[in-house]
Image 1 (spheres, rainbow, N blue to C red):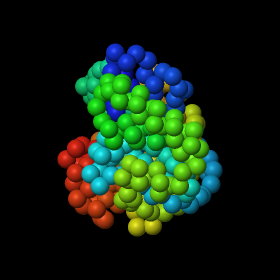
Image 2: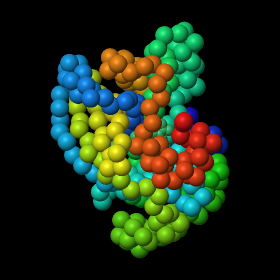
Image 3: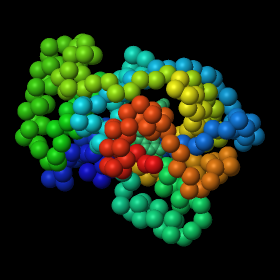
Length: 268
Ligand SMILES: Cc1ncc(C[n+]2csc(CCOP(=O)(O)OP(=O)(O)OP(=O)(O)O)c2C)c(N)n1
């Protein structure tokens, strides 16, 4: 598969289930340090305040950290399940990015610091994906077909939506490893870029710029736009900013944090 780092299809499998069969929307995002003057700066850039909301996130993984070590993040936000999976740029675009970086200037480095994730919200898709990551390996078509049959049997029994959370989490040996509440103030900028300013209940703040793109070809332009805005907000070009999960795991689960650092899924 060309796009998803954790995609389990090999070339012989033909069409990619995740990339080609389904429409996709990818988040291109970058975190930035939220300072006392950030809201003023956003307004100066023409940002429009769209509101404040509060939400509670619970994150899940196996005891062996199977999902997060695959950069796959399963959470329950309020009552909704969400799964974030990484997206890889096409080889040509990757080269283009490296070229921009070699060419000097802050833009290339900024772009490199943007992350791209696909967010899945359909529970049956989430369960399929979790199963694939749990089982691991590429091109295990026969096994996936058998699993698909088991999944379809479950569907006939009423679907994953009808199972209790603890039933399906138990099926994959998933346990909660993080839980926190965020107060988020959101702004919209030109070009559909969203700026979220998060204050978390364990005393951490972070900003995030995000744009949704519909095709992989749109990823570099989205990243470029975010890079420009980050610079206008006064952020250093090579500043990697820790997110809520970095801060949470560092503070509350240093062993899990260390494993993710060593696997380069989080960065110091
Ligand atoms: C810069 C960066 N961010 C996240 C990761 C990986 N990661 C760690 S936790 C995690 C899941 C949470 O993602 P995040 O963007 O931090 O969530 P949130 O701030 O709540 O935004 P929302 O989903 O509401 O838009 C990911 C993808 C990474 N490797 N690098």
